[in-house]
Each structure stands twice: as structure tokens, then as C-alpha cells.
Length: 212
Image (cartoon, rainbow, N blue to C red; front, side, top):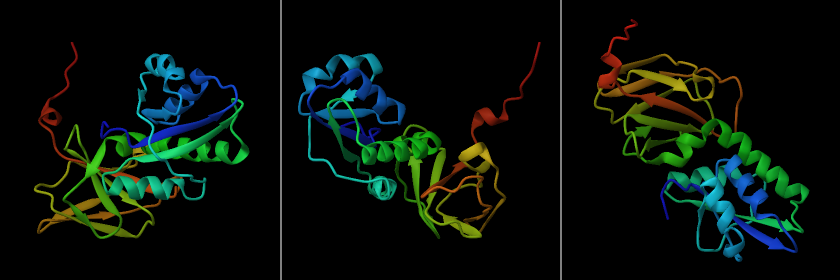
């Protein structure tokens, strides 16, 4: 399975259902793949919304209180999270809707880093680091708690920018003896896991913008 598929929704359907609605729901919360025991019913909708239709595998029964922790811990180890989504006569029950809302809220902020991140050899004093598998000049620090500062080791050069992904709030940092110290301020909204981006210097950063 494509490593960019960090979460997969496994629709457990009983009775009538609207595959278009279900696949659109998956897309809207940041999932890039779905599965079902009735794949033929989902084929057209998956093609419509450019969502991968995976072969069904065993999934996890999660709840809103533990879904983000489970997703993040799996991603830390380079694994996807397959989440069972019960659908009864085309509808989600209250607990399932709350689960989906929780995923949506978190993925709306951090889905890009989460889907495209892979384990990094860099180390950090708190949390852990993923790097963008398509653009390795971007590193992502995932933090469960927010200390006053963190120290990152393993970078070759001082980065160009460090920021909370949420609202792109810049953070003060200093590089000395191969250690990057980042001073943290609480972001506007605090999630179960918060993510900051370390952006390395790129050649295009040296291009001077001109207008004619």
C-alpha cells in the first residue's frame, strides 16, 4: 500500500448505504484510502474522488478519545492505521460521528505532515520527528506536551525557518554545536498532538522576486 496512506477507513456496512457519501466523507477528513467487504460498491466513488480502494484487512475499533494517539503512534513507527467505521442503513451512530469529527479536526491542521511524513534519523528531546518523504528539506516535530524548549540533533545546517504548522506561527531558534534549540510558545489551539515544521534552506530561497 502507498506509504502516503496514513489512515484507511474500513467501512463496515449493514443495510443500504450510499458509497458516494462514505468515500466523500473519507476524502474530507484527510483519508486517502478506504476498504470494504463490498469493494465493487465503492469502485465508482473511489474513482470519482481519487481515493484508493484497498483490499480489506483487519481494522481497529477506536473512539474519539484514543484515535489520534493511535494514529500518531503508528505513524511514528512508519505504519498506517486501519479504522473500522460502522455504517448502519447508511448512517453513522453518535460515537462514530464523534470519532470522524475528531479525526477531521486534527487532520485539517496536520494532515499533510501526517500523510507524507516518514520516520527520521533526527532526534529530539521531546516527542519525535518525521520528515517529508517527497521533500526532505521539511521535518516535522510531533509533540504530545509543549515544554518551554526542545533540542533537535542530527541536522547538518541551521534551518531557514521553524514554525507551528497551525497558523504558521514562527518560533525562535538557535543552532550551536550541531544542536538546534527551539523556544516554544503555546499555539493558538492545543491539540492532542501538536506539530511544528523545520524548514531547511533551499536554493529557491535565494531567488530575488522581481516585478515588471
